Length: 189
Image 1 (cartoon, helix red, strand yellow):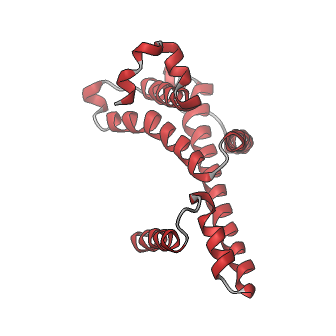
Image 2 (cartoon, one colour; image 1 turned 90 degrees about the horizontal axis):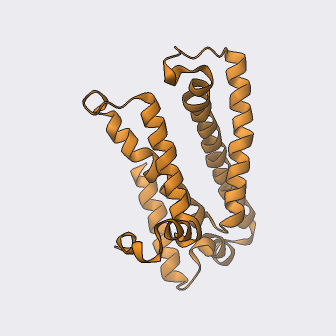
């Protein structure tokens, strides 16, 4: 994995050196069209499209499964309120996961409609991840000492992720509106 990551970064540096001033979103397609022989262009583009589609469907299925098994099922069954273990059978769990694939796909599609580029969309995803997942995960390592419950962790994920999304909308316009124009100086540091 480290070697592949290094090779991809090296490819980016070489394309940047060969074609300075290119938009980062269009650097690889431009390099393929300018440098690849005519017979290989289609094959390279098909391979890149296959890699993107493979990553996208894996991410979509993983997100839907995590939501189904770790968020929606426990909430529906009352497990977070002391209602016991999940009572959904395998067939209902599969149906729920399939429905969440459609929901997560629709949300991802709508996000991509507002962010015209992969890099901008990834920045939103990383913002939500850091704001909503990192701190609750770190707190879970010391859950007995800190008194972290399942409901508290889920609430922290939703609150942190929601705040991260609100902070990224319109360059922080929502947060500035809530805090007031003069009270956002600490966010700019």
